Image 1 (spheres, helix red, strand yellow):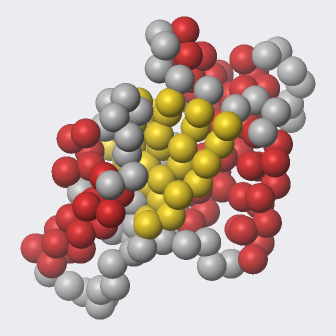
Image 2: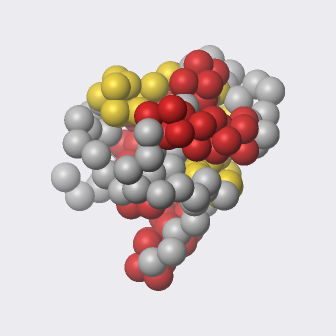
Length: 159
């Protein structure tokens, strides 16, 4: 399986970079995993809703350039479907059985994802009703994908 993590912005903190590196190393035993970062759009705090949409739209353009035809696109979205780790494992295994071997997870920037990106998504996934920093969300996603592969193979993992 080919897993692509498509994210707005760079990991700035060293501890997050190290965590990403560790999970990418662990995941290499199960799948080809690639992380692609696109530039986040600068904006000032307190901008209007229409300017927020404009920022998200410019980020969407950058994201969409990195989605390949045939990818199964999973958008991380607070309003998406929540799953347990076991359900995520079944979900990914099911995609593989259906011949959908290229999965692209999309993580938005500070303002989230635009409607344009949500529209092209095959699935919308929520990790919680809470809001997480988008940089931390990348590490959480990598950990859960790693856990999903461990579960699918019946391998032990901390509960």
